[in-house]
Amino acid sequence: MLLTYSMLHHPSGTIHNVESPFPYASSTAASAFGSSDPIADAIGLLRPRTVVKVGLHAAGPWAVRFEPYPHVSLGVVARGQCWLALEGHEPVLLTEGDFYLLGNPPPYLLASELTATPRAAKPLWDTAADGAVRIGPPAEEDTYLCGGHFSFDDTNADILLDVLPPLVHVHATDPRGELLAHLSHLLVTEAETTALGSSLVLDHLAQVLFVHMLRAHADQTDRPTGWLGALNNDGIGAALRAMHAHVAHRWTLKELADISRMSRSAFAATFKTQVGTPPLEYLIQWRMSLARDALRRGTRSITELAFATGYESESAFSTAFRRVVGISPKHYRDSPGR
Image (tube, rainbow, N blue to C red; front, side, top):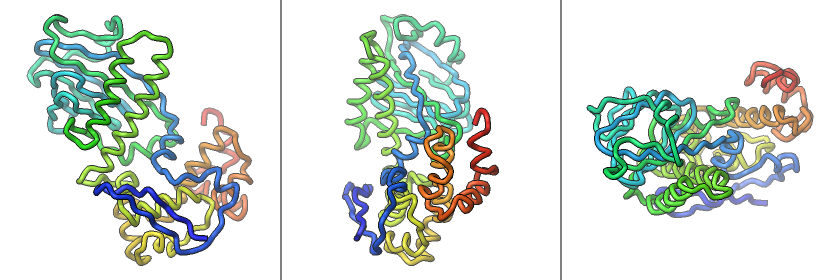
């Protein structure tokens, strides 16, 4: 049969279908690990825990300094404007309706004026009341920020953090701005309410907003590096989706090149340039990420994992696992605090 990998989003907005020119059948074990959506795959492994912060209402000159955060923060300027200054980077002016996402950020500043004396964020947030932090007289408020942060499972956090820049800035005028504005309106409304279930709604809204921010980043004209940016490439994106959809298939370089409609040499070079690793090494790393997660949760035996990740025997799987992780699957499974 011919497998079709559809829904390949291109910056032009068109949808492309790419067919695999070779027949094969996937095993039942593989299908349990298979998904043609690498973003959903990665977020699923990361098991994000969401914290939606109270809103910041500000008036007059102000500045707030935030300490480094090891995972992801995001926010929206619901009203007014402010500066965002990441240590070691040029300040960026955020205007009303703009969104920002910070990947593993260094210390940073949010400020009405870059010359304002900054105050530390943590003690300021400790003063929150009625779901809000306030700076200056409420009657003179001219800025309102709303946001939150995500913490991830540390075992696989690098899958995403390695391909995110310190700052993703999505302007209100961006093509995705209207959809993001609707999400931010819902987020702000829920953040200001004490209705039953609001924490659950906030958690889901923040995750939806997070995914749309990743899409916006992947769609930017200066295409990001790593697998996130490569998804928008018709050829490389098709190969990535194929590998994720059929983890247990024993992929060859020729099969992946055929899916990408490229020669083997061109495919291997382009994949490494865009994703950062050779294609078959990427596949091994992804298989081992899935295996680590399954071993930690105790959802499969080592033998089941071997076949589900494309290995002919438990010993072959164990050899690959040890090379990537540094210890055997059994030791990893049995290690306390893994």
